[in-house]
Length: 377
Length: 183
Image (cartoon, rainbow over all chains, first blue to last red; front, side, top):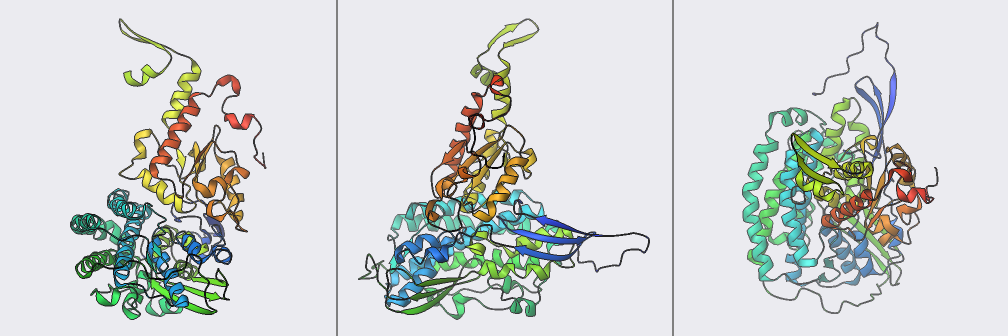
C-alpha cells in the first residue's frame, strides 16, 4: 500500500481510464460526500469532491432567527463536536453586544469544549479503525464515548445537540456531583488511552497502511489553508487555543502535539495525543475553578444587536472554526458566515488523492476527518 | 429453540424420534424475516452518529439480529438518519429501488419526519415520506439509540402481520397506493 511511483504500463497491455463514484452512499465517506474518481488501473488520475448533499441553508436561516435561536442551528454543523460550535457563535455575539462573561462560565466552557474534543476524537479513532479494516477499536472507542455523552446528558439533557453554551454564559452551573463524576471518568480514561496506542497506533498493519500514505507537506498544508490536527500533523505549530486564547485557555498549560512528516499516521497520532492534552486541561480547570456566576448580567431575552460586525474563531475538534456576523440593528443577524474547517480541509483531496492507489483513498479521506454537516452547513 | 417456538401459533409436542411443529407458512416466513432485519448503513446527518451508537458496544444492535450492510442490494430496511436535502433526494430514491422487496423504511429524527429545525429552509425536503413510503417514524433531534431499537421492535411487529395472500413481498403501505413518485 505504499506510494509506488507511476510505472508506465507495459507496451502490450492496453489500458483505459474509468470514472467511478465514491458516494454519496458509501459507508466510509462519513456522511454524504461524493468524490468523482477517474482511475487508470489502480492509480487515481483525477479526484473531484462534490459537496452539497447535506446543504441545509443554515447561514440563510440565521437571517430570520433570533440570536438565541441561532445557537440551536450551530449545534448541527459539526454534530460530533457541537460545544465549540455553540461557543464560537456565542463569542461572536458577545463581541457584537459587548457582554462580559463571568469567569466561572469561561472555565465551564473550556471544560465542555475539551470533553467534546475527547468525544469527537474518540469517534475519529473508532471510524478510522473501520476505514483501515480494524473493527474492534470502534467498539472500544464507543464504550468510552458513551461515558462522555452520559456526562453531557446529565448536565444539559442532550447527547449530541447540546445548546448548552448560551450567549453570555452557559445554560446551568455544574454541581459537585457532576465534577466528581467527570473526575472519575478522567481517571478511568487515562489508562484507556494507553490501551488505544497498543491496540491501534503501533499496530504494524495499521502503521504500514498509514505511515507512508497521504503525505501532505508543510507548504501544501499552508497553501490549502488546512487547520486543526491536519495542519499540525504536517508539523506546523498553530493552535488558536494557544495563539489567540479564548475562554480560559490562557490560564491552563498544555502542549500542542505536532506530527513530523504529514502522513495519515501523523494526523491520526495528533488526535490521539490531543486527547491526553484535553484530559490535562479539564483537570487544571477543575483545580482553578471558583464558585460564582455562570451567566452574564443583562442578557436580553430578545436581543437587538447594535449595528456592526464581529468575527470570532475557536479551535474546534476539526480545525479553526470561525463565524463572521454582521448586524443591521435588527433582532437577527443581517448576515452570518461560517469558516468551516472541514470544508476547507476537504479541498486538499483533489490534489492529495491524485497518483495514489484506490486502496489508499479511504485511508486519506478518513484521516482528514471531515463532518459533512460542517462541510455543507 | 424452545423459547422462540412458543411464540409461534403452532403446536409442539414431543414425539418419539423428534418434535413436530404445526404452523402456517406466513408465520415461519415472517418469523425468519423479523429475526434478521439488515439495515443499510446510510447515515445522512446527526442521527447517523446515534445510529452508530446503537450498533456499538453499549446498545449492541446485534442482539436483535440487526447487522448493518453496506450495499442496498443486501439490505432489508433503510434507516433514513438525518436531513434529506433536495440534492440527496434523487440518490435516496435510487438507493430505495436498489433494495430487494420486501423493503422497509425507518424515518429517524425530526428532519426525516417533517424537516425538523429546517422546516423553513429552501434546500430541505420536508419529510422523507414525500419521496419514499415510510414504515416507522421516530421522534427526536436526534433520537436516542433506544428509540431506534424500539422502532426496530415496532417494525418486527409489523413484519409479523405480513401475509402471503396480500401479495408476497410488498410492504403493506405500498399496496394501499404509495406516494412513491417514480414507481
